[in-house]
Length: 327
Length: 299
Image (cartoon, rainbow over all chains, first blue to last red; front, top):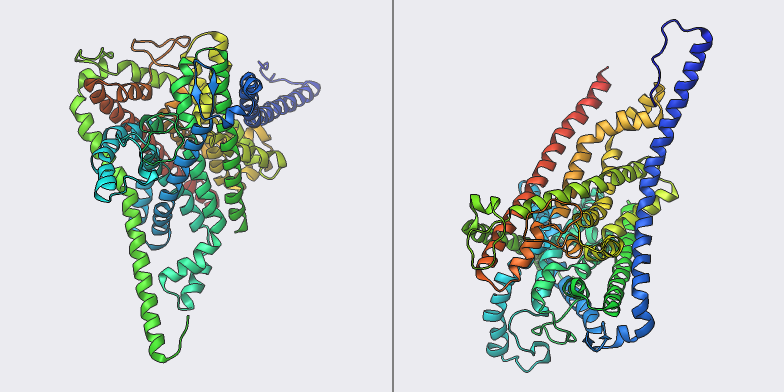
């Protein structure tokens, strides 16, 4: 690349050569630049493909020797080489869906507040605080839940539900009730996906044209009727997308759940009973996996988690993009 | 809505107003409930963290349970080194991919990459950790800082890509056209005009991405692994703040659990300091961009 200094007494010929070389240098720069950005862009699909292939190959021995029992067996017994993912898979779904159910109304409320109802002075601070909630690392949520939330559940909530409300015989509240439980995991997940759903929902609501709101108000709608009849229908697909993005978040959430769910291979039939999720199964066992079949079974678990989150996230992104393009 | 008589209409209006007021107050309540966890967690962090925080906490190495005077010096250093490695991987790729998306906006490849970047950023971070374990740790036979940095770097790529794209698209097209009209090559236009104008925004995005991955724990479990000793080697296990918090919090020892709060407070301060810095850069950026455009118009 070291170009010689331009001669000051250049003949016509050398000047012509010079300019042609400069053009050459420029086009090399262009080509380098184009190559860099194209290669970088291609890294992303390549990475996704590589993740899928690497995990599929590592999971293959377990899939081959266990087959469908991986997904249908309810027993996870490492010494006897029984690796049933069903409890963890159902635990993942149960905790995430529960969290989504609890978080959605609150998050939509916060989004409607910031985008439609808040006094202008409160808008930015509230939005910033909710975004701040999203910036807290998972392990800090886990620490808080372990030290504050779980003891509260054990001391106050669980005895209240079972003794004061006399619901101890209802299967939903059965189990040892010593704190770490499906309920604890669902609650901490709720807090964690709240800001995420609220942020996406806020953007979707703000994308609804002003004219829709003005038209509704001009027709004599109250504030709530304006939101219900003019804003929400326009934002419907995007709001569903926000929910599903939150679900995708919850499905793969690892640290906080691992710290409070109790990590027991039980089918998630009771809120008060400990359970397991795929992500926490990986977090707990992967580093100390014994034997190639154990590693391979855990890889299969990672593959299941990967497939579920790709489908869920892909669907959500498609929905959100579709609403944004409607504008 | 049935409206039989004038009086009925009157009550309907009242009912509608009441309904609106009820729903509005419910929305206020929902927002308040959303902010409640932030208040609770911050309060517990400050109280729990203040108990163990002191100069020694930042300079000492971890001690076994029961031995007082332990610190998190190696965790802080380890986290900074991991972030450095992650940025070295995530920045060039994320920046390039972001420029690609911004410049070839409507091509089919760009649409696909944009979608896949979103999918990549939605993958559970523990799956990325396992992927890097299979890719680097298993062949090399040991946990290492390099593997941890790669895992965090992979997580950074889609974040920086999407943010760079958004920032570059804010640059007025007139600037680009002016440069091309002056005979600048595409590469030179992008690097000296577009990128420079968008630079503060990109710095912001990168800092936010670093802040996002700084607290990641799951991808480090099987890559960086953690160690109670001082280490800055790339080819050996390394301590990291989030890992230390996790180990301390789940341990049965009271003094370790107390130290977990201190570590969490330090981690949160680090994350929020990075985010704050990032926002400061963007604020000055808006003014500069406006000045550039206004200056151009004045001439």
